[in-house]
Length: 255
Image 1: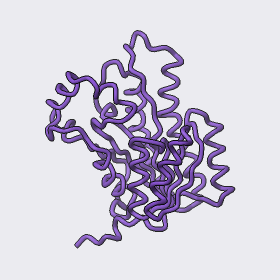
Image 2: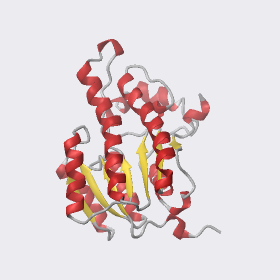
Image 3: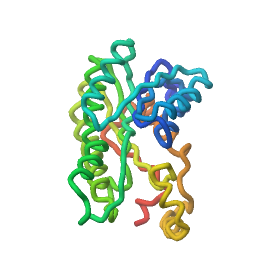
């Protein structure tokens, strides 16, 4: 018999980056529904307040903080502010990310630095700050990976490099931090429509071609990610670390 306490996050404080909209906002709300209080961090303060209001409406505490994960000083400032407020997260959802499609021969140094610096370097230093503030307590990290952590995507070389690196970083940190009581896993969404990907979904030809590749014959909905994220953060996954769980409607299994 599976007891509901195995998926209960009551008493936990979760830090979710990129929480102002899309996947980040959905996961923040899902963790709150499982009992966690949440710190929502991103650059869009107004949208963060909207996401926080939804969490407060279900009876959980929500704190809003500014964060640009591409700025290492901003990451340091975030954890300093959390400490000053006596807020010590035990869950980290490393979700903040960016993308810009460009043919590889047109990729510039600044474009590469912005994408890889946000998606990979930023994720690492947020994770580092998170583990330092744990100060001996156990905790868990979920890094938002991607199908491009496993397959190559033309015209998305910096993004693919960053997300492949994130999967590798997940495994390396899991091995290093397990003795500290910190689990590190990845969550790999398949094709989900968000503000960042809306341009693709507006193309009827692209939609038709992609649906033909999906065994489940539908695109993902944000709620499809919530159960997987809660599992990776909950006692139910206490012996799971260094894994990337793909929520992709069977895409990777079928190619």
